[in-house]
Length: 263
Image (cartoon, rainbow, N blue to C red; front, side):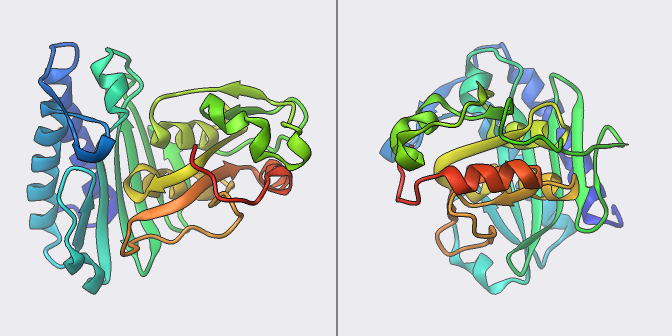
């Protein structure tokens, strides 16, 4: 049995990658989830089944929250929970893009304590423990110290509509996009981009692992209103995400129009 949660998550993520790669670019079956919740492939389900059985066997007292498992309120009675996205970036997976990831986290009392984001097709293993720093393939990573001018910000195009910014003035930043929300967070943690934002309710499984990796890389992460993120909520969503180095995070937060958004 792995002694630490991060070691357990790392081993599980590698196993997940082995499973997912068997389906990748091999036309896995795809169905649409109810309520417009997006597509799910047989690869998502196979990875989820492996993770749920193996992780819960190792930590029998942990609760379970996963995109591909029907939610159960029993997790709210546990001290620690696994928060899992079996494949983050399912649409990228379906479209033969390599930018999909396995996102695994352990939450305790609403705070992420251990996290792993693994991109099998790039062989990138991002990992972090609370207070222990963040790494990619065991090499320490840090966010940039960029300010607003000339910053590169990961986000979908609608987030840069004028209606979301004070006085309708969109910050003059370079916008970039990647399919996986977890990967976007890790790219900022790695310093390859300066910040990321999403101005829509975000599922905990998409962001829990990446949020800790950002923080342990020296960055600041919050909801779109600037409030700290809290996990294992009864409804497992947070109101958007803003992540960057401290200076850029403050600058973007100050420019956002604080109103409900659905982007």
